[in-house]
Amino acid sequence: MRKRVRGARRALLVPVVAAFIAACGGDDDLSGPPSTPETELGVVLNSVERSLTVFAVDSPDARFTIGLGPDGSPVALAVRGGRVVVPMGIVPAAVVVDLEQRAVVHTVALPANSGATGAAFLNDTLALVTNPSRNSVSVVNVLRGTAGAEIEVGEYPQAIVVVGDTAYVINARLGPDFQPTGPGTITVLAGVPPAVIGTIQLSGLNPGDAGVGADGRLYVVHSGRFGQGDGSLSVVDRGTQAELQHHTGFGEFPGSIAVDNGGRVYVGSFGYGIAVWDAATTSFVRSPANAITPGGVPSSAGVGLDSAGRVYALEPECTKAARVFRLTASYEVEAEVPVGVCPIAIAFTTVR
Image (tube, rainbow, N blue to C red; front, side, top):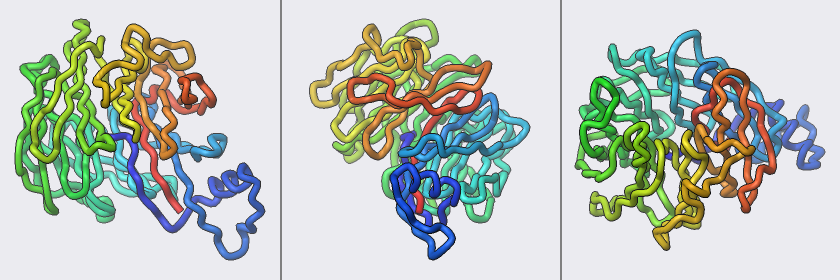
C-alpha cells in the first residue's frame, strides 16, 4: 500500500492553519472570512499506543494526537482528504477518523477473526480493508460506518494499492505459523463495487508492501523469511498484469516501500535501515550493506514521501515515545517530529 494519498477537504483545523500561516509569515485574520490554503499533513500510526500523530508538513511543531481505542494491533492506515481508515488487527474492526474533528467517528465491525491489516481508499466514500485470516477484503463505507460483503482474494492479503478504480491486493501466502507457503500473488479488483478481474503471480516470498512509480509500474517489496536475509523486489506491469522483473539482494526482512517521481525506490527494513534502488538502472544507489541509517539507527520501522519528494523514516522505538526523521536530498536528518510509541506507518494528505 502506497503511503501517500492525495485529497482535499474544505474545512481546515484552525490550530493547524494558524501555526502553518504563522510559520509562513502570513497575517491572515482567522476570525474573519476563512482563508483556506492547501495544507499537507503527515499522519503517523503509533501501533503500541494505538494512536495517530498528525503534523503539518511545513510546520511540524503544529501537531496533535488522536486515540484509536483501548484494544487492537494496528499496523497500517489509509488517508484521503480529512479521513483516515485504520484496520485494528486482532480486533475485527476498522476505525474511521475525522481529522477535522480530531476523533474516531466510526468503528466498523468486520467479519470475526479477520485479522484486519491493510487498507486503501477507492474514492471519497469507500475504502478496502484486508482480512488476512479470512483470505478476503471488505468494502467499508467511511461516511456511513458500514462494511459490505467480503470479496474473496488470495492467501493472506496484507496490503492494498489503489490506482483509479483498480485495486491491487498483495497476498503474502503465509501459513498458520506465519511462514511463507510459496511465492506471493496479487489479486486485481476493478470497478465499484469491486470485482476480481485477475491474479498476478509473483516470484518473491512474503510480499508486504507496494507502491506505484511515475512509470505506472507497481513495485512490490517481499519481506522473505525471517532470519534468512532473502528480501526482494518485484516490478509489475499493470497493463499486462504480469511480473516484469524480480530483483534479489534486499536483505533481512524489508517491510515498507515508497517510490518517488524520479524512479528511486526507498525500501525500509528493521534489519538495516533504508535501501535505495534506481528503477531506471535496476541497481542500488544505497544497498542494504550501505543503507541509510536515520538518526544513526541501522533500522527503520517505515518509510514515506511527502509531495515534495522528501523522505521520512520512522524510528523503531516501541518502549517509549519515538521520532519521525525527515531527510535531506543527501539523506541527512534535517528535522525530527516527536510521535507516539512504536510508529509503524506514515501517510500524507492535503486538506483545505
